[in-house]
Length: 373
Image (tube, rainbow, N blue to C red; front, side, top):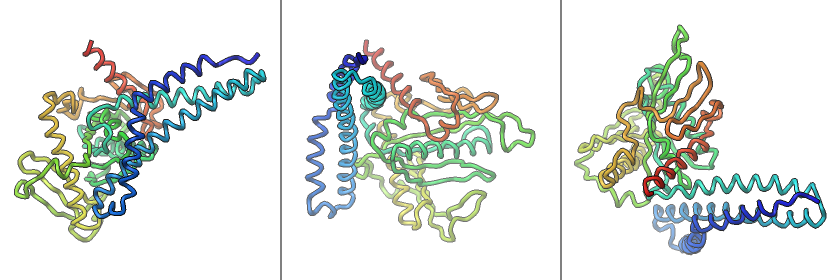
């Protein structure tokens, strides 16, 4: 008789039922219907900004529901296959059930992690800023490597990205950069990346091939749909500087002064953009980033616990890192908070970050539960 996996399937079904409640699937279905009606309105595009918000929200809800429905359908198929395997004593069908169960369990794990993204802004898009810290030209090169890592991670998830600004180092790498990541729960996932990241390797910029330790700060803020209304900035509080976009080695990207840097004078907060073709477009993008940063500052004031919201990172150097990436004398990436680690550094630097993000989210949930007991 073929081995029975009925108990395993029943356990998976219980997890699906719980997940349906945790993800508020019924509420999301109602929300989907509401957004579909709004998206079908003939005057939708009379207000392009509002239209984009509606279509973006609809796309996200539909993606979540499709993913959950696909999981349920897969489990339904496996239950039918299990019955067939038992009725016909079919070992081949039983093997298919085993493989399918592994897939279902993995997807359940991923979706259950998504239920941990319950923060007020976790479902929003994110603006990521990376700043080179201690380590000279190696730190600038490290900042550029981190940008590539996060852009690859976003690409693997099907998220959209837009780079707003790159300040290139004189010899190599980036002094700083900022970019937006748009996708379901983008801020919730990326907020665990906030902090100092440490790289240890043989420096490609050292003629004596010595080992170098470099640091870079990753900063993450959410983008809110209502940002225009939430943060109103008087013109007299802004200083707008226009300059010529530059590339690696100080090369001029274009021949016009189209890049824009906007400074909020009361707080000293700065945002810049040189990605667009026109000065007007760059100013609009820079203001978008600036408003996101100012909104985050306001939330910090209301939250009372700055360290909990933003990690409390002051020094971008030794002793302040949240994660270490070691290329020499051995290969390892280790998160100092969750203690999750791997020896596959190349995959991590190519955007394979989910395991690290999930481990830190689970750690935060455990800590929150411990505080409540």
